[in-house]
Structures are given as structure tokens and as C-alpha cells.
Length: 102
Image (cartoon, rainbow, N blue to C red):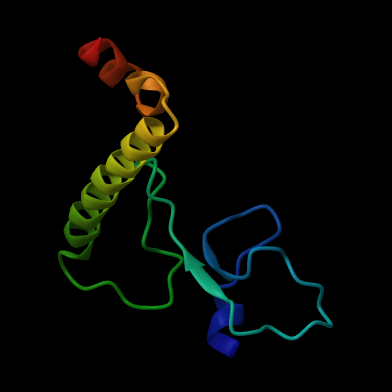
């Protein structure tokens, strides 16, 4: 419990341990606590606020996993767009990709 509180998220931050909403001080933390990582912006991604000591090469491991997650997210969004009969470019993430695929 102390470890989770040490790396807990603040009211205005998403990274760190915590539940979906910020809990009042008197409320007990429950089993829905999560560890959030920011992966959308590589410049904002850091390993400094996390409860484990990163090993050598862990940043590269995270970057590979982030790329796989992005590909999965894009695939899922394309499938959702197709099932909703939306235009293909509706869910593309970056403007460069939209221009590239038009």
C-alpha cells in the first residue's frame, strides 16, 4: 500500500498508480488501482515515476511495445469505422497519414 501511495497520481496527472477518479483521503484504495503510462507522445514518456527500477534497455522494450499498441489501436479503429460505415480517414491518427492515404 505504501508503494502505491509513493507512486500515486495527483489530481492533475494521469501517470502513476491510482483509480479512474481521485479518491478522497478517507476512502480506502480498492483493487481497481491501475498503473498508467503515457505512450501517445514519446517526448512525454518517462520511466522516472514508476515503482520499479528500469533495467538497461527497458526504454527500447517499451518503445517496441508502444509501436505494437499503436498498430493495434489503429487496426481496431479501422474495424470500428468499417462497422459504423464511416469514411476510412475518419480515425487516422496523424494528419500526415491522412494526406498520405487520400
